[in-house]
Amino acid sequence: MRMDVVERIAGRGAKLRALGHDPRTTPMCRRFTTVPGVGPITALAVWAGIDDAARFARSRDVGTYFGLTP
Image (cartoon, rainbow, N blue to C red; front, side):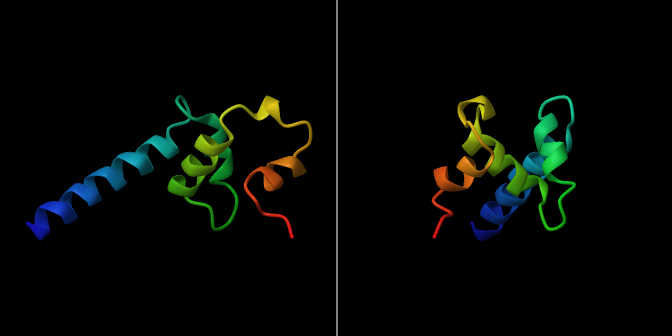
């Protein structure tokens, strides 16, 4: 039972990493992963959260959207 869950998690993690590195499906994620410390899973999470970057007037509004302001 436990090993089944561990294998499923590993399989899904591998799929997420592959998706985050595929420049055809997520070119923005590919750029995010060039930042030191940002991996494909973090890049996918940010990409999914932002969705359409055009809805933000300024880049600093993204931090506010995620609640990253003092």
